[in-house]
Image 1 (cartoon, helix red, strand yellow):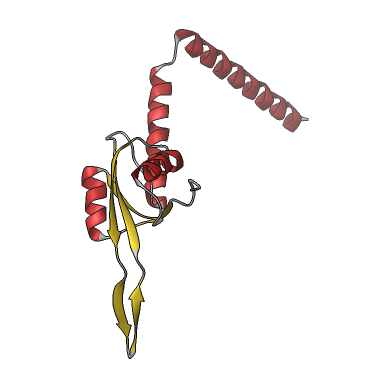
Image 2 (cartoon, rainbow, N blue to C red; image 1 turned 45 degrees about the vertical axis):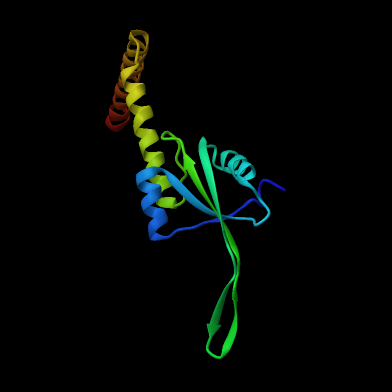
Length: 147
């Protein structure tokens, strides 16, 4: 089976949200023909995370009624995926924005801490050069105004 066809969609219920935030456990609706190994490979490939274990649950079709019409709800196969503590899947755009901000802050902190003496000297030279250039431009502007 194609790796992109294994996972259909994430299941977002109150119970799955609690498990996702507290225990790093995600729930997905998967294709009915898949098995645990395929689900593990697909999640690791698509989301680039480390999967510890996978549990699968089959739900049969259920009878349902809408007014006087009766039929069945679709059968579903759910996969409960347990991730490593360091791994995380971003399901919402807000989470992705927060993650980008955190990464940017971390990189800025590392850059400011790891400035060597040579870089400091180079920064001072650049600062002096720009100040000298601005001073020359100001003098030229004053001379033109006097004329």
